[in-house]
Image 1 (cartoon, rainbow, N blue to C red):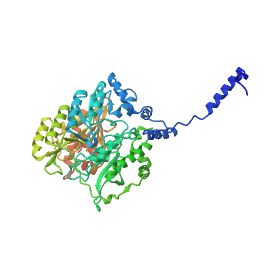
Image 2: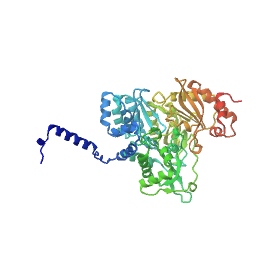
Image 3: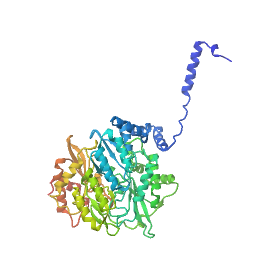
Length: 572
């Protein structure tokens, strides 16, 4: 047997080079198969990279670091007074913390409040937190949720712990996760509802919190439950819409299932022809979400929502994959088999309304553009505790309801609310006014939407006698958090002449019975000119409408050129 000493130095170098070349040509050992809750996401990413496609930067960030394991970093950054940098800005949103520079050198913190319902104690506790650690108030969002603003870096960890102490959480309220689960705001108290959505929204909420594989989706995801009552939850704008319905022949109540709502991309959830028992909704939703996780686009953020997978595959293929994931067939029900749905009250989220429980009422409190001070939060908690059952219900219309107020207590509750600078009534213009955060707290927004919204209605109310509910939505950017496409009047922020705050004007949008995407009729309206432009449009409607015709119907039958001329004052 040859020994090493039998080779010359030159032969040894040759053999070393030869063996190195052999090793280089040998296939690398196959990577071990991904395991654990995140494996479904890694496999999905691998399918794109194997096909030669490049992962989006957010996907790379999620693959390099699991955001749910960042608590120690958050605590350390908080102790050092540091904000996240680079991809950590995105990943920190998994904990509900949004670093919103350059709009503000601060965090915004978004909560999770299933079905939008919290106790008076939680509202009062959040008021204390807002005063101590945030900006002294909170914003009601279009997902029946609350946001705390102006959170300093050094307060971030304490804020999250204080929120948890109240029995609430911010986990998964941002980034590529399932957002706050919404349900009918009048669930359990609506005289016309056919199903109480509270238990299903609650179960879905806790199911998400306890399943790590339901985080890190291709993009954000929305789930809503509608109970069939008078107050809307805008379920048709969600990725999954569960809408309660009664089968006429049997009286059975089920959830009809619609998929793919994303009005910022001009699409509503489309009915699938499927239905499920209410207690099956969480399992069905999870199967749908897991199919989206496995096959949603991980390379193009603009096409990474469920709508685009449905557009690519078609509903038949997507439903078949969902049934495979679920392990059984889903139930098909002919839409003609259902009883008609009770019409929604367009502004039923404002005012005094009798409940299904005799002698009790809910008070719909109008919150101007969703903004509450800590003092108002504390005062509302007190009203709910003294005059109601200690329950506060947030709505997708950026206001709130105080439920279970006895007939004899309504007048005093109304007076106490008025003493807070709030009201249980609003004009037909103000009752449907919605505005996103705007450029005072969002780096994407092109305009100060909340300030402009208030100024717009202040201008309109004394000048046009609108006598039926009308919704005005102002959103700051293309993300359309205020859903401008479904407003009777929809306004999206824009920079006029490159620097001046302004808006593009859309009209004729609506949801539910009025489901329609608004049409753009004017561009680049300076914010200072907005009031007169909308005033002329509404005045033109009042002059030309048919008896009992809504603005929605008027814009539906009127061509864009005529509407544009009305707004510009050029109409004959």
